[in-house]
Length: 136
Image 1 (cartoon, rainbow, N blue to C red):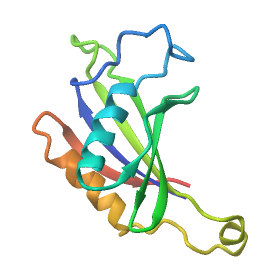
Image 2: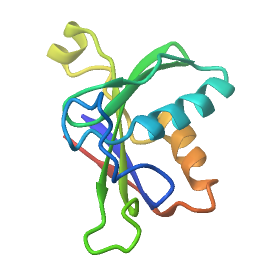
Image 3: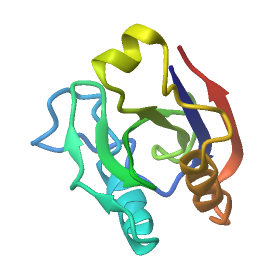
């Protein structure tokens, strides 16, 4: 189970495919670096952004719990600004095999890491349509 924090903006790169991207859709490097900087400033231990075939991710530790935080973006079709689009921050809690087998220690909708990230996103004046969704 994961929760997603979504928002719209044109601040980040959704148009220039970098030579080091695994796939042409691997946007989010700049968003992951931006979020890492803010989480680190709050005292969290956060790894450097790394890439998957769908986007970028960081891992953070908050209050003794470890989280995977994925970032991906989709450009808005027909937008004049090629960087206009929707960003998705995916938050998953790292759980032990035992926790997974017993259904324990799941990410709760009121877990503080979610409110921290959402608060960071909501403070940005050029981010619009901020919302949270539950994933599976």
